Length: 233
Ligand SMILES: [Zn+2]
Image 1 (cartoon, rainbow, N blue to C red):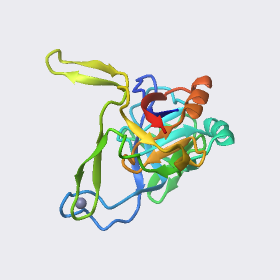
Image 2: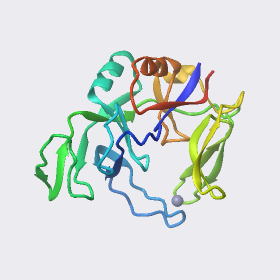
Image 3: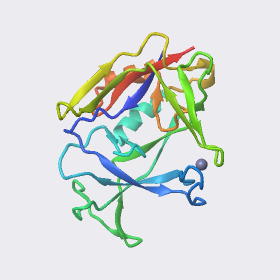
Image 4: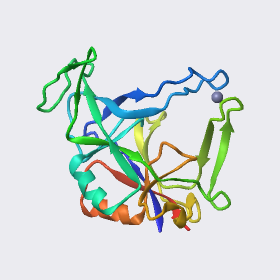
């Protein structure tokens, strides 16, 4: 059984959002690593980037702070799979001053033009597990001695992205399959039958099993891609 990471395919035909909140109250920045002590909390407060592009079944924030799925996609997934819950989404006016909103009005709320978006939810993973450290090709690269924040790195996972080539002066696609025996390994039993999950070592990643990935591919959901990141053991 493969572990798949759900990612933004970076297709310019689909609209992206910038996520500006919401954030929990924090104790300011860590004095040692300058990391924020705030955490993302519902709702997702987003603005549309630019003025063009279709809205996909999945919508990605440019900074990676949230992932949105359509109400219809959620209905189909929730009937079959566990491991995540959904939270509300609020759209605020973008830099062009419009809440680009594809047919909705924009009531004033708390001094900010905002509206609850009824066609999307934010995905929140609820099943969190740890890697199996002995066989995963992941290492802790750094740990803040003051706040305990960790940064992990993994080698040998599938890559599909564009990199800027200075010599050519253009974006060039970089693709590589997962190397045999590399990546994130997770105990199947830890998942409690969940098909969506996160690993604590890489808290920004949305992971899923073959079952969930095969279903999503069969439904031909738009604006989502899957990279092979490891295996269940
Ligand atoms: Zn720190």
